[in-house]
Amino acid sequence: MSGSFEGNRVVRDTGCRFPIFNAPVGYFARGQLAGAVSAAGGMGLMETSSATVLEATAAEFDLVRSHTAAPLGLQMFLRVLKGQGRVEEVLDWVLDGRTPLLVTCVGDPTPIAVRARDAGVKLYHQIGSLNDALRAVDAGVDGLIVEGAESGGLRGVRSPQLFTLLQQVRSRVDVPLVAAGGIADGYGMAGAFALGAEAILMGTRFMSAAESPVHHNWKQAIVDCNVTLNTDPGMGPIRMRVAGNELAEAVFRGDIDPAGNPYAGPFLEAFEHGRLDKALVGCGESAVLIDTVKPVREIIEDTVATFWQEVTRLAQLLQPGSAGIV
Picture (spheres, rainbow, N blue to C red):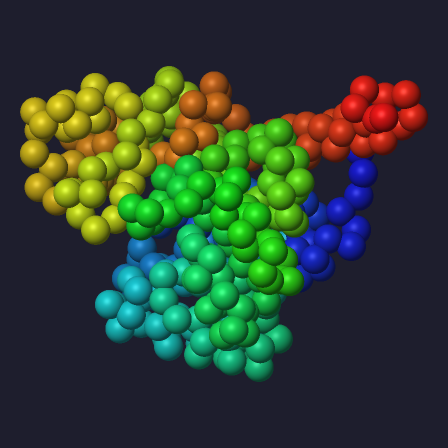
């Protein structure tokens, strides 16, 4: 049995068919991957900060548009773009009729919200705490991406898990919530919706998809992963989650000095050439739930089917005589 996402506020804001986003991870979420998510009915998010010139980002966007006209979101990592001195340049480009949705993270969304509203573009901001959520809503954002500590992304050492954070945020705000962290399938999607989300964002699941631009060895390391490790706070002010492979275990034993780099080596050696002896494999806790590399379309179709299966199963508890009904 399947249902409908009609009335879902995230679907309304974005125009996508299914409220499923890919995480806009730098280097990963380029045109190839984000475009595949959009073409499959999800809400593809393309990052704008890993290329240091706008022409390269524009070329990735054009690549998507050469394959699909489906809605595509654009993401701005404000701290990185500010460091590059490119916030206004990228924002002008993003808001020039290219997207229904802008996503921001790590920075003050207030001036962005004013520009986005004037351009008729919805603005969602990624947060990792209740205080961040309240500040973003006060700034005028239209929705929130609520990222729990299960994620592989950048987060503080005191970040709460998604199960708690979603409930905290849901009780204090009334904007659409996109759940992120620890979700790899329809079971996670159903759980997130039960806690107040109206969409999900999956990073590791899509990073390991067939269309992901990363080397196959990286994807296979996720498939083979049965434990993830957190970088030690002493390695820097942020925490990263990584696959517990041979290199990671050596780093965590202290046999290899990461020299302040959470990836403990040249990232591109692993990303482009599959040298997992050179750099750690960043991933979320959900890596332990992934057992195969799949095309994006299959991931989305399986996720939606399992979501409705679980919603139907839970709805049956409302029938007289069902287990759990007194």
